[in-house]
Length: 287
Image (cartoon, rainbow, N blue to C red; front, side, top):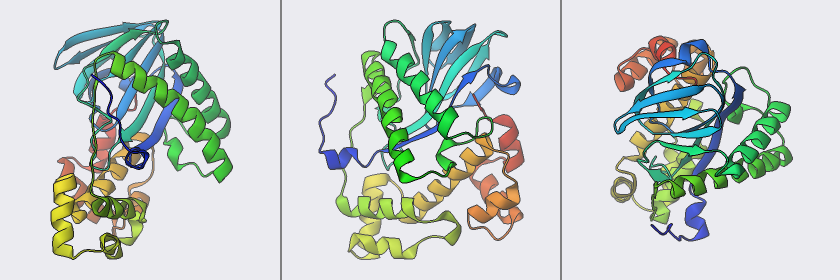
């Protein structure tokens, strides 16, 4: 399938962000079990050992010297006791939340066939370790940096992202296509940029230059969500990432998300995920 050709402005709407990259053995609690990998993208390069993943389409196994491009679904995986890997978790999504490649199957590929994947991953891991240090598995995107360092980081990250995208297309993934209404996109960007601790930014809806009723129709047509639901989804994504990748106390996380107290946050989080924040943190992957 021929990759879509879109205006550069449309490509600029993609949310591209590294969550983490590391090069070592998986954590003990993440070696085996059932894990939810529906939010974002994962890629694992096995330097030692092997990993088996049971998915909807069957069982796949990656061994030393191979990449496993992990499916965006709930699955069971099992690392061998001697496993050491480069693990990359990142986002490459349209404002609607749809990944750049839609529902790709798991893919196991030999590293020798796509040497740019390993080369750029090692370069990215070294850059992050040297310039953006963070506690184990925490989000690199939350590390403060000057703009010049951010530009250097983006260059290294985008080199790896390009290699990943080319490998994904070569292994049968279908690229998604985005065609958006500029008015809805302006509001989505304003919602993405607004601080989470200040509550729903009512002024952001004025960025569309249309009435609230008309904006609601445009927004639902574009994202299948209202502006408020879009905002709530953004808060939920942030909460999940923090619980999965940090030891941030619930009180502090509640304040960052604009809740008056941790109990208010807990009730809201359980309503959306059917699990308490503590249980969610214990159960979800850090691989």
